[in-house]
Image (cartoon, rainbow, N blue to C red):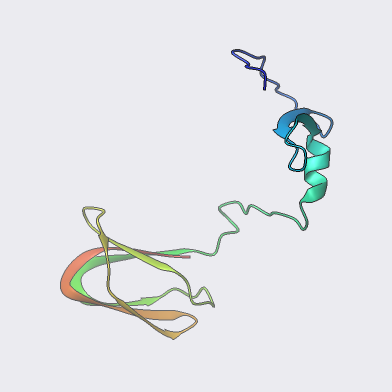
Length: 116
């Protein structure tokens, strides 16, 4: 494969633009159009903006070893908890229903829970 030390940056990308790759059958270096690569992708990839993401941040202002969080996300979200120093803290997470989670910790502390 040829070495490219510098190249002009393309600010307008189109389906006819080409990229360099290797043919999986022959092992030869070839040009592929972005359109041909796109045709291999089935389905649509949607990247939501921040207004479309179902998430909730719970602030636990007072130290507690049991956090009860009502998030109203209507799902069983993933939960990440950090203390006030932004260190991740692990607890026993119990989903009461699709809108409420209770987290039990070994010691009382204040911090935040990020649910999504």
